[in-house]
Image (cartoon, rainbow, N blue to C red; front, top):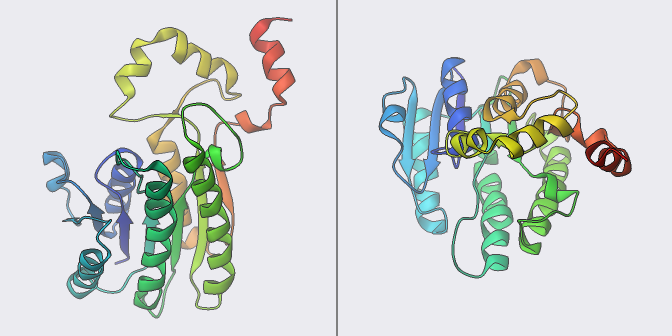
Length: 246
């Protein structure tokens, strides 16, 4: 039975990834800063570990306990987000880059000797584009995360560990679903600009992660997969003309 570890899996996309992995027959270990929702505590095959991921010593102890209790890893997924109120630059670099590097370095030797093995790093469109709503720290940290993914794809590949990235577009999730569905103008705008004609869901990205964390993706390594319904294919001028009718 594969063992999947998810860093940042008590809300948003990480929560859905945990559910899909459990549905797929994985033993799932989830690290989060907060207690899981009551419904998630009842998920078969899922163990939640509450840990302050900014405390590297405490995190190392949690990682050690996870392997001792559930066994060697097959898959490692990074879904954590910086949600602090302090210095945004230091916080983003710490949680997005330093934490990811520390966990990869700590856990690369804790993968099962046989079978499929992979890591997935969840990135953002702001790694490649500049947009409103996120500070420079977020843009730079996510861009660095993409290069980190490529670095480890090369350097862990010889150990049989594939490393890939997933870049979601804005998506409907439990925490924001009501906001978008009640804001009809905004919801319609997303559907209009997306070639597939609908908003993404958390499940769309989670299914791509599930694919990358499976033998079906056994020769996929060092790739960053966009889950945006084709939006990134549109030339900005074409998109602007379509929206303005000019």
